[in-house]
Amino acid sequence: MVLGDPRFFERAGPFGLEEIHRVTGGAVQRAEKLDGRKLTGVAPLQTASSEQVSVLHNPRYAGAMQQSRAGVIIVGEALAGRVPDSLTALVVANPHEAWARVALLFHPSPAISAGIHPSAIIDGTACIEPTAEIGPYAVIGAQVEIGAGCSIGPGAVIGQGVVLGPGCRVGAQASISHALLGARVYVYPGARIGQEGFGFAITKTGFITVPQLGRVILEDDVEIGANSTIDRGASHDTVIGAGTRIDNLVQIGHNVQLGKNCVMAAQSGISGSAIVEDFVQLGAQSGLAGHLTVGAKARIGAQAGVMSDVAAGADVIGSPALPIREFFRNVAVLRRLARKGVSEKAAG
Image 1 (cartoon, one colour):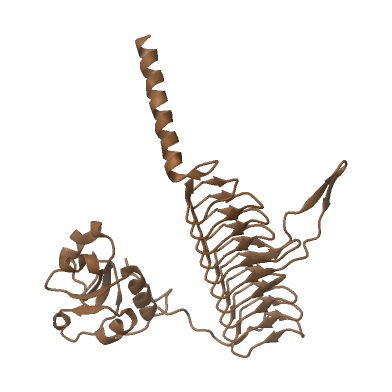
Image 2 (cartoon, one colour):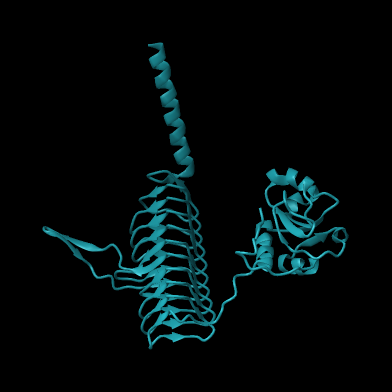
């Protein structure tokens, strides 16, 4: 396996230990073991060479570190004493963060190739910064504003009036309408943002579609995963707070207010008009009913079905979702009852 295959990933470097230390901070142990070698990339403990940086952030892999040939190992303070004397170590407070920073040093985001592809369709009233990149067959609507350093992928559609702040990236065949994007927003391929929400009035003869008159607001540094969908607001804007990370195949309904630095895993969903406060985490395939509130720093387990408000800092799982301790007490009771029933049946 080649980590960071140059056919697919940008590469930078090589870098000396001082440059690695600059982005990670922390304390250097046994720098002399590196013998002044330049470092060329990152790799797992098991496969790293003497010119690569590796990381140990889980004690269960400490055994692999004993056999590692890595040039530098990033390690947390609690495990620093287990690094072999033959290896150079960078001891940091948060190994995962340091690893991310080093990996970005060696593999920066692809550079923008400023310009508009000849096959792109651009409305004459669109305002596009000269440093932006517009890919093949992209469609840019009337009165669109695209900021400096943006990248619009092949076949992407940016609808009338949409505003993209500086440094945004829109993947291939994504579509954005009725939306205002802040700086450095990343919309992955196939995502759908700003389409009409699921709103209708019920009559005796059928349904009447209710106009969805709000927008989608994506604040700075938001990421929207591939094939995820975010409906525009009906009577209020749908808002995704700064720094939030949304995985692939996620659905967010109209009028949702999603706070700052939230995380939504794959196939999770939020129904209309729900309020999710800052730093909330939603597990894969979890679902929130509409018009409820999830407090800050709450955690929703995978496949949980949330049908009522969740207090700040709470951990809930199950469907209907319950506080985690209550859920497992219920499971234990059911198991005891099941075992008792089996025993009584056998005795009878």
